[in-house]
Amino acid sequence: MSAGLGAGSGGADLADILERVLDKGVVIAGDIRVNLLDIELLTIKLRLVVASVDKAKEMGIDWWESDPALSSGARRGELGAENARLRARVAELEQRQEETR
Image (cartoon, rainbow, N blue to C red; front, side, top):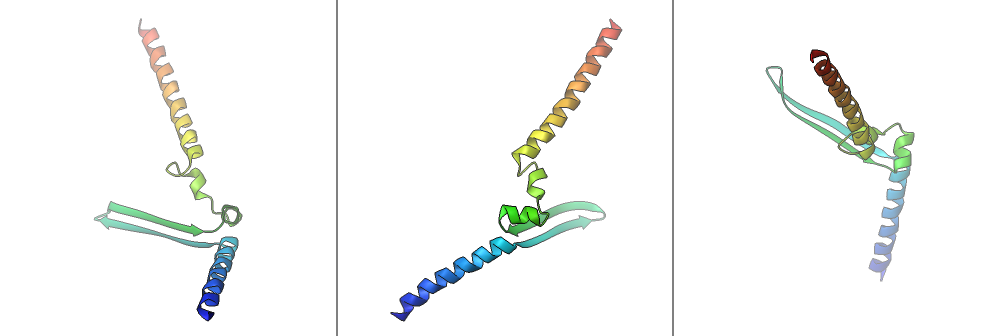
């Protein structure tokens, strides 16, 4: 009978711990780089954030918003900038073509 009570309180303890972690936030970050003769062979970036999104932003952690691999908004911004550059280049080439005629 006490085993049943212990299991129930363990779940409550785990829920309390998870709530505290999400409220306070835990961040683990690290980079691993492998270079050979000043040539970068491998880069591994590790980022682990265990927090609510609001808490992470409050702590100043919002790198996922500007990372094109993680944020559709960042991809749109990046693609929009690339699109503008390409349109300018096409206009420049068309103008040169008109001048040579």
